[in-house]
Length: 111
Ligand SMILES: [Zn+2]
Image (tube, rainbow, N blue to C red; front, side, top):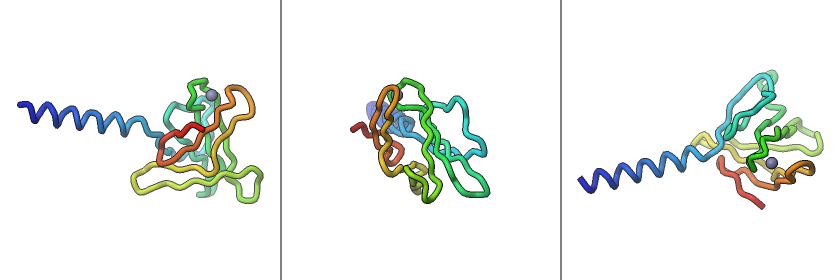
């Protein structure tokens, strides 16, 4: 019985670990009110031109990152085999909460 309990708690902790990650969602239109833990990849003609997300600090601000090649600043991202996203470069809000963070493998790394 002990082993089942242990297995259960292990599975549970793994699930919650997974749930804490931000996951990508491809959309045609940028949401006005992005959900927590979702990286919106806004697509047009099969190309992602914008990434939209809610600020991870909890202030709920909408963060828009331009991915159009040649634009400044320009962000790029990788979607990994495990379904998580990495963003380049870091996100630094110059207004509001002034959050500065990296998104690596779906996890927020604060600077
Ligand atoms: Zn914030």
